[in-house]
Length: 374
Ligand SMILES: Nc1ncnc2c1ncn2[C@@H]1O[C@H](COP(=O)(O)OP(=O)(O)OP(=O)(O)O)[C@@H](O)[C@H]1O
Ligand SMILES: [Mg+2]
Image (cartoon, rainbow, N blue to C red):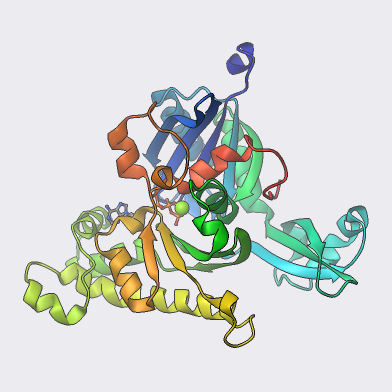
């Protein structure tokens, strides 16, 4: 590979979303971690279904094109999976050596996973002793084999060596919590909420440790589809109308504000439903603590993903949940430098590059601060 002639193998983090593909290349420099390249391109339509890449030819061609246009000469790539079919759970097993757990993991995992073990890939990491000294805490990850195989095939077909298939939640935590410029998130409990096109991912992170993840099938596409039903045109027309919409709060003041807010009126009930699901996730997290426990509070919500760009969204969610909300700009929150990349591009895409940034960092940091499936 050409990049290895220069003594280093360039790797790129690629977040293959159902709406857009994001690529980030990061290098360690004497000044610290630096983004040397980043790119965003639309995902070919209908190419991803339920988290599986079903059109490998077009997606790999798009990746080739975007890397060429952005002058990213990577040999290896890290990408991730996510969605309702990906199971990420902290569970307890009787204490046993890792090799023994590896032999029985499929059997053990079957107790926690409803889908067929035959079609799943299961991985785990032993986290340490549980409260009961006969038990140990284990991070269990399982995903449909197709979801992983389709990513491996896509990267290979794009001329890249698939180095790791990570989990989107872990990539987000790596970028926004582990690489945060301050210790704030390491000392508090935060909910990372990534609102993409096909789904919303909720991750609760307590003092830097992953606590739970949940997937909610309400996101940008749901909003676009309801606007499409309202306006009667095509998907692209509805997307354009959505991008001119503002999330206003409270709804009673809509008439006083004036202007054209018919799109917001049809989106608002869906956003409210999404917020109810987020509240449920937070309550589930809190139910694990004794009543009144100081550890149970969620101090802040950090929102990422393309849908986080809706003006007023952060304020709206914050008012509904009574929790501080920050719309994350991944490079403002982390100590990662961006001078090498066009500033307007970085400013525009700061909230959508969080997953790809976490993926780019995966191979640059010493094992084993994070986990991966393959
Ligand atoms: N300025 C904007 N205003 C409103 N919505 C926007 C804006 N920019 C992007 N979006 C929406 O963000 C979504 C895409 O976000 P993102 O790129 O994070 O999704 P994805 O990672 O491709 O999807 P997923 O993770 O769900 O597979 C789309 O629904 C798009 O309409
Ligand atoms: Mg996404």
